[in-house]
Length: 299
Image 1 (spheres, rainbow, N blue to C red):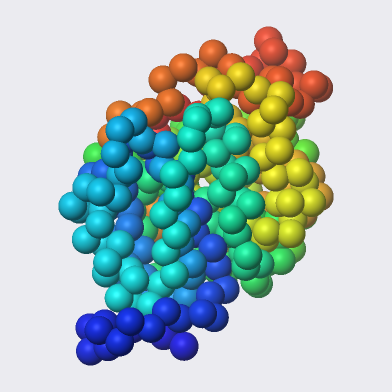
Image 2 (image 1 turned 90 degrees about the vertical axis):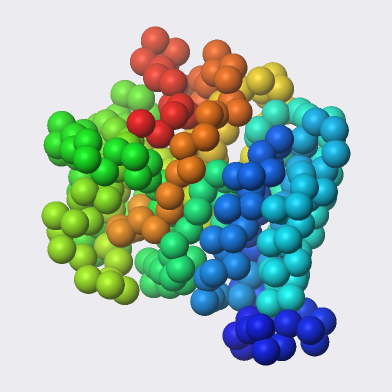
């Protein structure tokens, strides 16, 4: 069943056969969130449920006109939208675990509140997850202000998956960790152009991790523990998605998808205290001396 077009917006009917939960944590970003939601409203499929969890200071972010307007559009299209306040703040990992506990479908997309998706991107990720059968797929957000900034020294680690996506171990002392610069700037946009990918075509590739736009098989993520490790972390931390993905990759594998239709809005980060890397605390075999600031500006 397709989402409602403008001809039937006034029916007030919610489409109930969603195959995907989209989970968005947000705080103090009404303009960015409105752009992110507008990208979702332009997706032709699949049918999804949307859960937005807000930890903003003061009034809820959906009280701002740009956000409330797009929420109305999504609901008129038949999308089930849940707007939740989740306070007090206990850190990024706890916020993601709270969102995961709201999911009911077999697929979940964790989408940051500053990422716009081109039409069709959602469908490509969903199809890829079905076809590959791995634990997660994702589209690394691109900073389009860097389209003229080619960085061949950062794309040399690119490797497509040939054959099935296999489980992998990633740690700072493992060769797979050296793939992390692939997702900087607009590197993947340059790679897509060089590979000559056709419209509608997608290619899975090997990742160190994916930030900002990652679609999981929910059962795989929950079996790996989800983000329940949040209790091991102080409220101020980063890299929580890295820990979850590495655990899923060890059992089920994971892949990035080219071309990526995800665009980073390039607003200033809201994660300013990066002294605690989650993997250094949660994964005891990760050597502190090899740690890098994993979650940083996408440049």
